[in-house]
Length: 68
Image (tube, helix red, strand yellow):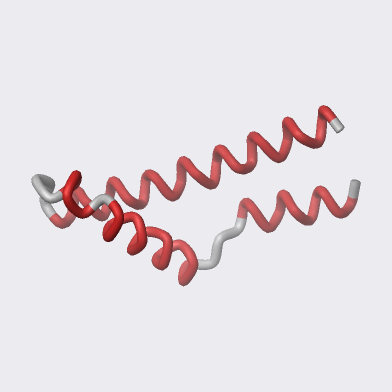
């Protein structure tokens, strides 16, 4: 149980550097799709996507812990 708690703690905390790296990867990957948006809106969207991913990983980890 302690191992899972540590794993979930790691999911909750993404270093600022890792967060920026992931945002940049999303910006490059979605370049064509988000091109019509302003630069500020592109950054906001990518930040929101990173946050959503983190939240989903936390939910899935909790579900896994309950099932197994």
